[in-house]
Length: 226
Ligand SMILES: *Cc1c(COP(=O)(O)O)cnc(C)c1O
Image (spheres, rainbow, N blue to C red):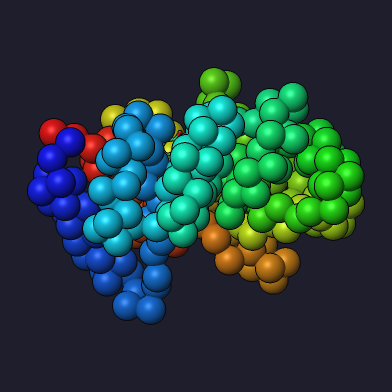
């Protein structure tokens, strides 16, 4: 992709984030993760040269390949996709900045075992299935707080930093907003337990997510459209 197109896309996204966050609170800082799953390593390098540092992938295999190929750049890698148990060791070897899709107590227990073996810790977000869609992973909003506190208690090598959600899959803005508001309420209650990241918002809904309190957005297609 042409560098000028990438620059324009990045500027557009940053400007929209800026506008949305200023409408909420000038002190609200919003981090932007560039989701590189559908793009090339070349485009990641270009975005890096334009100042972007945080990137997200949803498959461990691709995350590993890219983290290795780009290991000379000071990038921050986020694993944003569902993690299969047989990929845990691979993920831990990459030492990502943040694993955003911790979606069950069972996975937390498996992760904890492997973290103990490797004498490592891992920053994670609890994924919440805020729209109760059967096709989505994540814990239900009803059980989110209990699950979060339980993981904090029984998995000392897992450093929970907050919550992540994918907005409702619909054109109905009200329903998308509901899923963000549900997640934000959970996040608010967990702040006393150390939560400081509320990751919600993708290309189609990040402005709405920010208005609902998101402080981390994950943007893919808007950055890489030609
Ligand atoms: C792909 C993906 C994104 C980015 O989606 P876009 O609509 O391309 O911005 C964000 N979060 C998760 C979990 C994803 O899998």
